[in-house]
Amino acid sequence: MTSIIANCTLNCNLECVHCYCSASPKNKNTLSLKDFEQIIQDVKNMGIESPPFFDITGGEFLLIDESALMSKMVRSNFPLTTIILESNGLLLLKDFEKYESIEFDRLHISVDAFHSNLNKGEKIIKMAMKLCENKGAKLVINHIPDDSRLSNEDCIKKARKVFK
Image 1 (cartoon, rainbow, N blue to C red):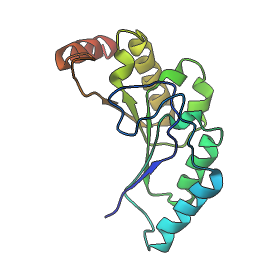
Image 2: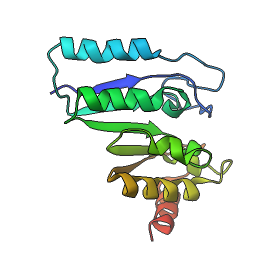
Image 3: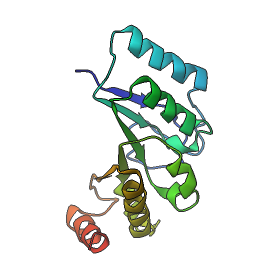
């Protein structure tokens, strides 16, 4: 079984030193709607009719103006596929409605939003929980500890506080 990971943009509202794709606010490299349509067509041309997962990621996918349309294209072409949206969650605080317009079954929020410099993590996770409840989606929290972020123990303590 083949899953699809679509890294749609290198533009991000954060500039994390650990980012696997070096996304940042300075990097505006983003797939066009036409290129995204071509990716979907290429997947279908390979005979993949219903990949188990279609992971929409970046940078920050929600910074793409056509993000809602792109997610709807995935849903209409692969109705049985689990759509994963990966995000740092910061835009939940500014544009909750944009998240509501995106098609997804699982929302993966990076716990880097718990970082002490941002200090918005608890609110982001609570809003993500509300969003997932509204959409009948699952919430997944991603966290990789290192010296620049919370330890596993601190992350678990904060998460337990949020999930009470």
